[in-house]
Amino acid sequence: MRAVRVSIAVAAIAVASTLVATAPADAHTIRKTTPSTTVLTTAVGAPFNLDVRHGRVLVADGSGQIGRVKADGSVSTVVADVPGASGIASSRDGRSIAYTTSVAEDETTITASALVVHGRKSTIQVDTLAFEKAHNPDGALQYGVTNPDSCVAGTLSAAGFPVSYSGGIDSHAYSVAAYRGGWVVADAGANALFRVSRTGKISTLAVLPPHPAVITQAAANAFGLDACAVGVTYAFESVPTDVEVGPDGFLYVTTLPGGPEDASLGARGKVFRVNPRNGHAVPVASGLLGATNLAFARGGGLYVTELFAGRVSLIRHGRVFASLDLPGALAVEAGPRGDLYVATGITAAPSVLRVRTGGRDWHR
Image 1: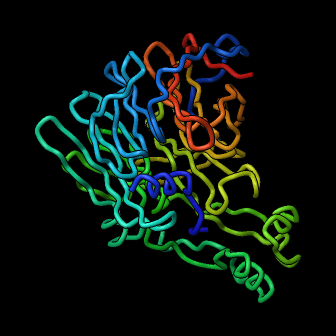
Image 2: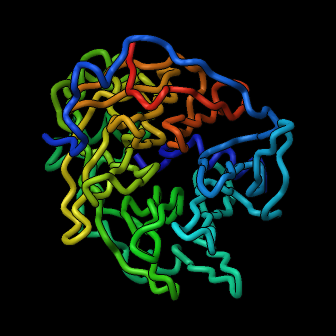
């Protein structure tokens, strides 16, 4: 449902302008204790993404900058005047950083979106919206209801749901990860992953498949749908919110479900494992409530922030374990010595925290 998806980020922009390929879980690698947390800063507005490399903590702040968290709790400006900042990543050699930026006309319409790469000698800006307009990677996908009868079509339309449609022109470069000398962008508008070379050449790496959901009686009641809609399958869009390179070399992607992102239609967020050679995407975990970010920790675990559940969760072999209750859990990144770094915001006070894990995975 294009009209309301990725509202957590677009709203911030408008205000400012089978298989988890981790190591098997041995008994001694997971502990059921809560690690200690330290607040590093509260001097952020909307910390959508973190980058923890080369002895620094960088934050993409949706309030309009790329910042660096300092030891005294302040945040110094690395790049100013970045409208809709949401993604940040540094290269493995530390010679460049990449960040995403988007300009919104209102809470549903993005008019500019790009990846910017700052190197030591040059800056490259890659226009993802122009690429989307030229190629529309999900244009061949069909969303909504296939062959709806007049009752279903009428009640969906009355409730504001598009009845049946193909992927439209929409780009929201949201997250970025360093990958093989270049970058991978998770575009929450295009419903796709884009590969960007070190010279700025952009191409489609993968298109996320539609996200089908059966309309339940509870959902029908919540949205005022007629009884004829109950039991009907609606293909929502899969909206990528983060991308990371896994220890197996595959890409892992968190997705929000198109349409309502909160619990009104259930916990529908997923994590996909994407083969970078052919773009094939396979879900490895589901039932997540607002999956906005992920990170691989030293213990081998895959951690995911569930914004609307207010927690960080551990994923092992397709199972989701609650790890840390944290209202507004928005972004997570693995750091040195096995620590995790977590950002909060949107539904709670914004902050960046360090979580000391001792190099071990944990859950409640």
